[in-house]
Length: 208
Image 1 (cartoon, rainbow, N blue to C red):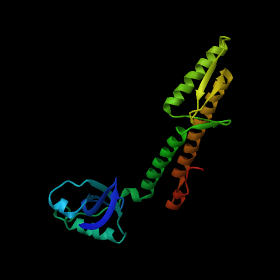
Image 2 (image 1 turned 90 degrees about the vertical axis):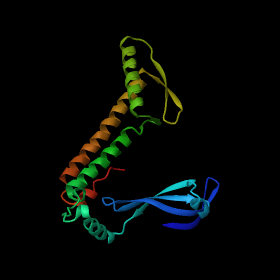
Image 3 (image 1 turned 180 degrees about the vertical axis):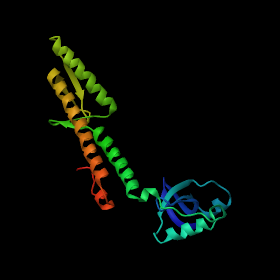
Image 4 (image 1 turned 60 degrees about the vertical axis):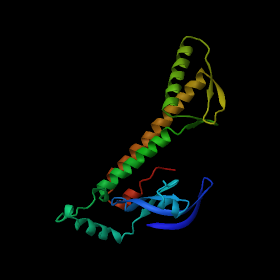
């Protein structure tokens, strides 16, 4: 399939479009394709490579699902096959997807930073390790009766001075942030397991 339309990208005007490599995703009810673009049809005819290729994702109308299935069953390879429901469309399958989404959100929140007072601290894996190490040094300094001072870089790249109690307070705030995040996830996991309908499952959402 080919089309004529003017598209300007990176300062180049493309006028001849051709769809290629169409793939069907039955699970997602979508078509994926590559939209190849040339300046003019003559460049395509001459065998020049397309200077630009766009990915396309096209939703499949619900009424086309049975037609696609019928077409697949008409192929020699699937002739006589029995169509089975997708396990992901069941409540159990939906629970698996919901928990995967909750875990992704859990990691986003845990590693997305935390606030203590008026300051926002980083909480990615590296930052958590640095905070833990600095807290240990602050505790050792306190036990030895030695001074401790640390200029800590915040999430907005400004910095604040921290003494030993301040550094340990940051460590405690990090622990509360991580523990609270996982506590929310465990509560949602229990709600997912307790859901008996897709409607109940849809109501399980990470709190704003």
